[in-house]
Amino acid sequence: MKTPENSMTISYWQKSEETITRDALESFQLEKLGETLRHVYANVPFYRSRCDEAGIDPSRIKSLDTIKRLPFTTSDDLRLNYPYGLLAVPKDEVVRVHTSSGTTGKPKALFFSKGDIERSANLIARCLVMTGTGKSDTLQNMMTYGLFTGALVMHYGAERVGALVIPAGPGNTDRQISLMRDFGTTAVHITPSYALYLASVLQKKGIDPGKDLNLRRAYMGAEPYSEETRKKIENLFGIDVYNSYGLTEMNGPGVAFECPYKNGMHLWEDHFLVEIINPETGEVLDEAREGELVITSLRREAMPLIRYRTRDITKILSDTCACGRTHRRISRIMGRSDDMFVVKGVNIFPQQIEQILMGIKGVAQNYQIVLESLDQLTIKVEISKDLFDGNIDHLLKLQAAITAKVRAEILVKPTIELLEPGTLPVSEGKAKRVIDIRTM
Ligand code: ADP
Ligand code: ZN
Image (cartoon, rainbow, N blue to C red; front, side, top):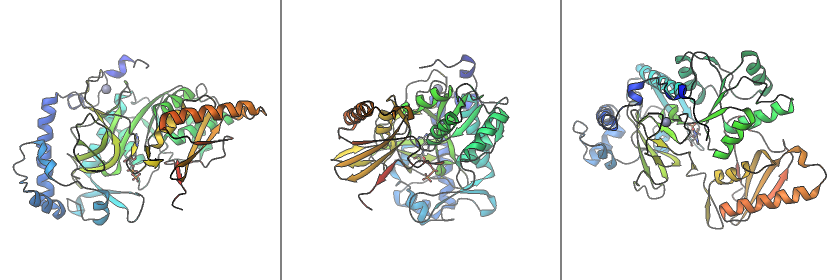
């Protein structure tokens, strides 16, 4: 692992909050949990009846464990209460709404007060300063502006640290490249799938992403990706890639973020209280175990959420981090509990396959997993153009190597199809990696 530059490790945006002692942090959490519960008890009938049913008196919260007596809040609760059912302040106090698409049915609406916007901008500012972005940087924001939180929330935080922000949005790759060159972009906010695509377009144009750009770092999130993909992108562009985690329900980006040590994402525990549960049974697990992340917001004003089930699979890393921040870290998100699929009785996350593919020389940027039956899976893999040189032996060898490596990881033998680069659909937002034709 690269050793972070010293100057980076000592930069904080809110030093006393970021390096608070664990004891002080826990008392602060207790205080904020009490405030949050009193606030929703007084203003959100949905939560008032939940507290009453659990026999919780919000004016006497003595322990953080008290919330374990409350039921989880799920994305269905948000949909059923759409649009204003979970709002905790008068509508006049709301200054912004974001929605989250989810998969089916009604969207989820999430509201922000002025204070919520302020606090989320500060959380992003912590993340940016922690990774070396400041006044002298130009940040090209390639996430989707609009109803999604991704771009706007990052935008506000980047302005706050004084960076020059290019509100590029995703797509229109030729224009992205011109902007990067014209303005000397030093940092990008981008999805991993789009970063891989961008690299391939640059290469096609004869631009060396590592040498011909001014880029120094990328903030990458919004979808699961593996350590291998991070390394691949870092090498292609010659930059540092920092993992960024967030969800609309908790402001969007800025919930958890990597520091220069890149050993898990610091989750800002003065704003979010976390638990890990078994996604099937709902049982609260020891936090060092892998399971579903459940978050209670501690500082949201317009729409606090109590024990919100993220569906994201991770674990909590409690060992101290050399950067000096005391907020614990979460490990790279394995996937969403609903992304997991089963082939031949084996539970598989797309990311396990991605991690293998991206570590194999000759594999290019794009792939797709096709589920054909309960015991059959095909992986379509784009490979480097120069491998299609008429030598069938090379192709067969690569195909056998991919088959063996994937099989060793997931214990199921896949069918591997090798494709020329540019064959598979490209995504500008979140990639759709798994095509399930069993139910079509
Ligand atoms: P939706 O995709 O449901 O519309 P959001 O746009 O709010 O919702 O996306 C939030 C989700 O994106 C998270 O719950 C998580 O599944 C995924 N996500 C965000 N950042 C990361 C990351 N760094 N690694 C893996 N997954 C991520
Ligand atoms: Zn750290």
